[in-house]
Every structure is written in structure tokens, then in C-alpha cells.
Image (cartoon, rainbow, N blue to C red; front, side):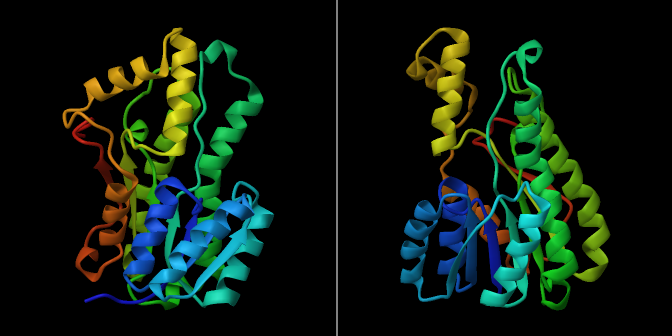
Length: 259
């Protein structure tokens, strides 16, 4: 049985975030998507409106705690208490560690890890999730949050942080009936995936096509996962049947990691 709630999805304009928003809207949930590009958000919202559920679009930089406070307040004002939070906003970033700048390190950690803390804290404090039946928080981490990734120290460190945060806070919230989990994609074909391949091609002095071949060779399934495959696990974790799953980090990776 499906229980309709208000879902807030950060980074909801494209890729995994947009796929999650589509899945949740199709399941009958009210959806608020946020991001930094109003035009992309509006295009995604127009698509979601076809599911016949209320959709709100909000712009915010979730690495800024002041903007996060405004975001959650506006989301609650638009669509009511938040029952599902999907912390999806993220970015890639890396290179040879000796050449990494302070700015890149801070930007990757701020976008990928700090934002998860800021939005989760605000939703717990003022988003009303404690008053909603079957509250759910799902953090999009990565298999890079379970193992080191070559030439991606900032990204890998940030995603390890998301996994650790999820496991700790998931235990804290269990007694309140709020389940919190991390979903860990491997290689997923999204706009960010193309940027990652371009960066490796430059670092390795090869072509993006050759990088893709090398990455696919590491995946037992032999292909990238799709954003919708990741979103399907997120959707499942919002259901009543997933109530006993909490403080976990679950892979969607075609067998890339079995840990």
C-alpha cells in the first residue's frame, strides 16, 4: 500500500534527482525539487506535472546553511510537512592530490557532504518529518563512499562522509520511526558521468570513448546503471515494506562493488 507524502528532492533538475522525482510523483507523492538552475528545474517540473500531483520548484544552493533554512521553510509553505527527503545534490571533482586546490576541495565537500548535513538538520528541526507517518531520509552516496577512487580524493572522501553520516543518524532516528539510508550508485549514465569521463581522458591523455570502455570492463554487468534503476531503489525505500531497513548503504552498481 502506498502512503502519499511530501517529498523534497535536492539536485532534482536532472540525472538521478530528476529520475527520483519522476518515480515519487508517479507513486502519488507531492514533490518539491530544488537546484541552482531555474530553467532546468522548470523543465523537469513541467514533466512531473503530468502525474497529477502538486509540484513545487525552488532554487537554492544547499551548501549554504542560510539558503537551506529558507528552502525548507518555503517547501513546507508550498506543500506541507516533509515526509520524504532525498539528499541528491552533488558534484564530481578530483585530480592528482598534490595539485588539488583548497577551493576545489571545499566545493566538493560542501556540495556533497555539508549539504546533506544542512538539509537533514533543517528538515528534522523545522520540516515536520517527525510528525509524519513513515518518515524517510535517503542520501545519494556512491560506491566511491565505500572504496577509494583513483584521482578522486575529494569526491571519495565526501561520499565516505555521507555513508558514515547516514549510518550514525539512521541509528539516532530509528526510535522516532524515521528510516534513513544511503543509496550508493556505481557508474550511472548521467550528465555528470560524461564530465567524469572527460576529466579522466584528460588526465590519462586518451579519449573519452576509451575511458568508457575501461570503466565498463570493470562492471560485471558490462554496462552503466541507469538513473531510473537508482531511482527505483529510492522509491522502494520510501514504501511501508521498507520500514525495517535503516542505517544502511545499499549499492546499485551492476556488481561493481559487492561490499
